[in-house]
Length: 446
Image 1: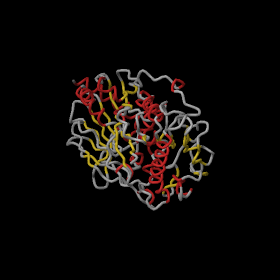
Image 2: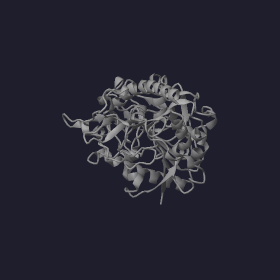
Image 3: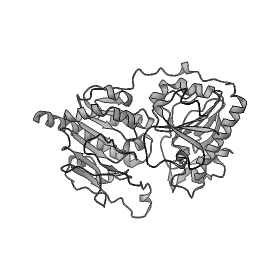
Image 4: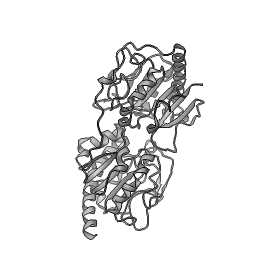
């Protein structure tokens, strides 16, 4: 039986039917940082998601290349921003974004999209952009499956660059595409993609691979950075997990200007002294094992009077953060489709400095779980039930914790959900000022 290796980055309670094995395929999760030639021996198909650490993949790109040279299949759905996938160029977003520009205009006759209507690919419950929000340059000789309204090739199959087969889709994880749209013809895509991958892998096995007519040369790729970290040792810094989403969110100029402390690459965090920083921001959807390994460093920062910000994107908040009690709640992504509907968010502390930069509406897109703020902390955003989504805790440690069950970095980084840009437009200048003022206050009183 053909075996799929699904590269994972963080735990989530909302896995897709494909990932859970419900579609009947042999799928095994494999940690991104455990990828190696020996670990991949049992597998014929390697699936990479949009949240994968591409800095790490660029360092082990020879492993990916040898997997393909062995006549196997690699499927990537996301935004490529580092060189690790043979033949593939970096993601180019649709500009300017619009409902019309995101429309799927052309689909080749292919088993992956058989019986799927263009309208169901173009919109999900009337919303455009779920399927693709840009493209990757197509290698010479590759087979283009889908194009957007402007002719952008969002999905292609490359059988030319290596003896194996590469399927690249710009933006989303096609294996999870059925979630929430079970009544749409687009819900066929995950199972049909998996079936195609099985057939492709079996054909490659019977052929013992194929020769590469235009091999992608690794030595033509950009040099590997000695370190992705740009930490300065002071100011406000952010943990960088290596994903394209994190990279865009943290390096966009209007946000990067508030990160005087630079970026701290997650695999290097356990060996990094954080006590000189005023604040460290931990984005959502980040590798839990590596973050936990850095727990002593993060706790040292709190003990030194610094500020730690932690977001959640469906995964539990870090258990090592003092006083943090997170509870899962099903995420309603579609509440706003009902006329006159609202999440009903409110604040019990409207005079907090947070609201000098943000309104409650700027925090309203969806949420991933709820938190129970420790006694004495300041709750900033609540549900109609009174359960908290955002709070500031100055009581559990000598420092400050800012906790939120929101996922702004992932959505803005993926060029999706305008509310998250409004949130970051206010949050980033606020946290820079708040952390600086708070740090000065703590150290003066110490």
